[in-house]
Image 1 (cartoon, rainbow, N blue to C red):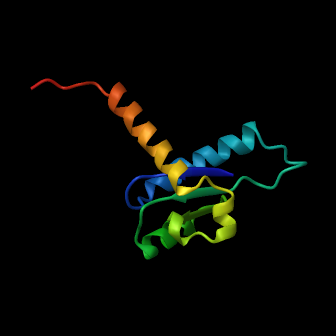
Image 2 (image 1 turned 90 degrees about the horizontal axis):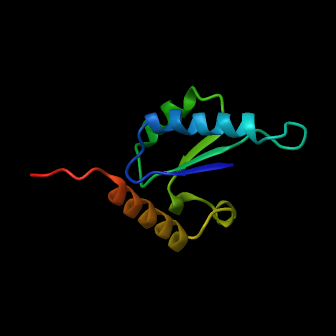
Length: 105
């Protein structure tokens, strides 16, 4: 399973990126004799249901788009809890800010 977290609303381009990650995991890590095809889950803060449906309509990889709140308890059990997700996001933001080139005025 590949889980990708995106801050902000759903963008169809995210599925292309997630599909690439799923393909890499399938190719490099998955043993077809032991494992089912890799599933990609994209967690966003929101999105237009129609846009998500159309974007997923052409996907050949098993992928889903959801917000954390819309997942079932069983689905949430396989993911970090909200506090852990928040810590990961805060760490990523701090790292991004620390490594981004500073612009001078």
